[in-house]
Image (tube, rainbow, N blue to C red; front, side):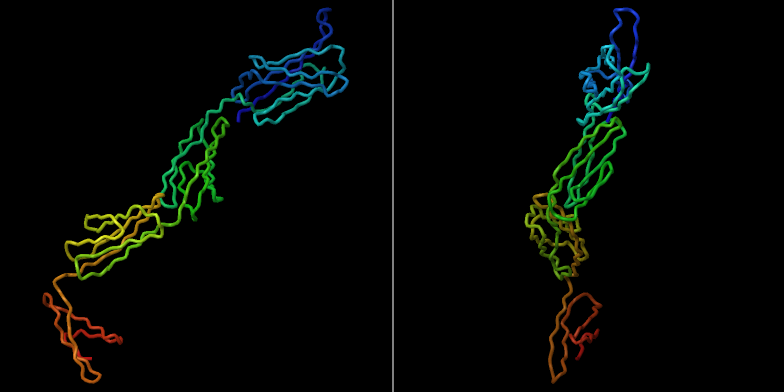
Length: 322
């Protein structure tokens, strides 16, 4: 905020000629404190405090920032007020006795609306779920300072902040920028944060067949995009998809969901496709509480066997008895 300094230089003269006798002459100067240049068109209200002295006048500074007036010479020494309205509409008042000693000076410091204000707060943002990345586009005399308020009682002074909101809602994000000339400007924008849209994959992660059906879920009810990546360069869209993998192995399958209000979530799950050329198969026969197992499993030799009998015991024999 630029300041004005009013220098009121009181010059009291007793002039000798008859034409000059009968008046007291005073002048003041208004200057811009930033540039020290004269401030023209500033209204200075001069008023006598003594109710017995009738003087109440508004004097406008000339192009040289000067204001002057004359008082009747026979007026007693009286206290006068000098009032200037600042840029916020507040009166700034100083006092001085007139007549006074020669070269006595009164100073008043105020801001003025005539000061140029060329700064502008401006920003845009990109939203990913409940996080926004802000691009500050503000302008003004460097250096600029930034005051961010995110509407959830958190703040920042960074130029390009990144903000993550904890809860859904509509937040008024405001930026106040101040430049080197004292200019201040504020911009606000509403940011809508929706409920979480976490993506969830439902599928058989250990499959004996090369074809697997995948179903996607989300906490959000307004999902508009279901994007699948199968870890082998192939993709598909849809909430429920079926994919055939080219060969046995482990694949990193990922699902990305996007809602209509641009909430985005991504999750991945590892899916193992077993060798399709082997098959586990057996039959059992019972004598009392003893069970024998006939193994009909097939596959490329050598084959290893792992039996689990359901009671905490196991076996690696091809034809166990339990």
